Length: 467
Image 1 (tube, rainbow, N blue to C red):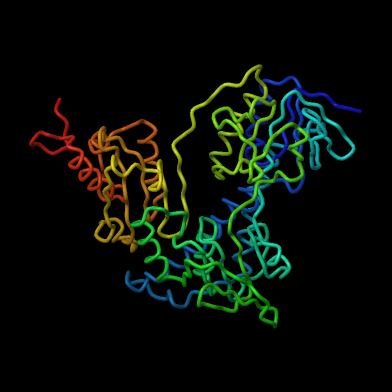
Image 2 (image 1 turned 135 degrees about the vertical axis):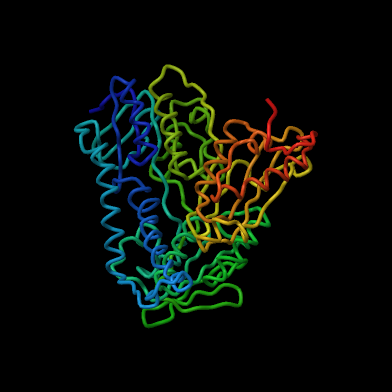
């Protein structure tokens, strides 16, 4: 027996739930299909539990400044690993419960548990049920990548799917992959007393491609924990339940290995070929990022599964666009927002707008400032880092930014919003800057860019604007 609906959404993660919000408004009939655990990657194994762990680690790490500030007893503070992890899990459960209570808990027969696969275009098999849908949204998310040889080493190999289920902190850990996830969790565990070694086959961290920002990040973070960069890692059994991890000429024996080398889109089970979809060499379909439509089919793809920007706010936008278009007679194109990426290490690594590798350097102005003597950062004991801005040489419009900055999440949003408004560096410079705040770091960089662009030919300060 076939059930016929206007829209079927495959996947109840962030993108799928955002799509559901739009489909509910417009479609006469729909189903949400989900195989595997509920709760979204962000709430269950991503953004939220990681930030809970990072907050505890930052609180404990702050004790290292107590003596300088005249606060006694910092060296007597200790960490109870089991209590830390229980706290993280408690918060994680709150976030997951909130997601479920606002989504699948009250869906009754419009929610179907099980893995979907295509039988033919528009026809899905879910267990014993068949669903025929006029339009289908694919939002099946992604899975951590772990080489098969490493999987054979058992529960000593961890990904974000397992790391937040630990009951005790390990004594030692290697983190393979110093991208966003590896850097955040590696530093957090290190600050909680775990002997962490960070490893990446690239010669950078935090997805930085700006050479000056990358150099600064490695210098700062490398003083806190060992970083082995530029060589692939290998893992072998070291006996006594431990693992030997090697990279280049370096080798270390550890209790656990956190593998954070990327995420793979969950497309394998769908059998998209039966839906008439052509996949590229990477096993991905071609789609329009402004409509989320796959070719000229009745399929839409949103979230981590399309492997473009695996971030919650992007998944939310993509889910909304896919949901709107799946419930419409014809798809509409939507403008995508200025890219923003934040790595919540300390100092934070933030990338806004165009990446350094995407710039036409012959037609781009670049300026930066080090944070050594920034007043507010000095007071906070966090006066390390660099802010780099890129502007169009002809117009002075801000194009992008890369920074390694304490609490850079706030500067990143400010700069992102300026780019959204297509502001020039002169327009930005004429905004008020309060004192003392971290945002003051932006001011001298803007002044330098205004000078380089020749945007202020008058003899009065560029910060001031005539009536």
